[in-house]
Image (cartoon, rainbow, N blue to C red):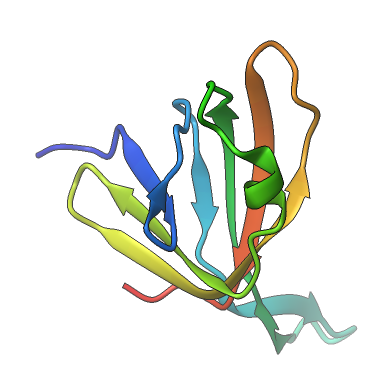
Length: 114
């Protein structure tokens, strides 16, 4: 059995040069649990967005302005174990500082579909 070790991230059709350690939170229904004074548990549901976090390598052909402006696109998070998570209505949510040839980005959108 192979465990996931590497991922490929694409924004629309453009592949990012992501470093090891990229992550995805697939989003969807989140249940917040609590308990009554009578020790009965209950929960409330709410929706949550999908979140991809990664560090990309900044090379001579990396357009961080285009990346910053990514909006209403489709993000693909594909693992080396043949799982592809697709996030519709995706946008770049945050971009860190460009430092040492790298920049951290966070992409968010609709809950992921497989």
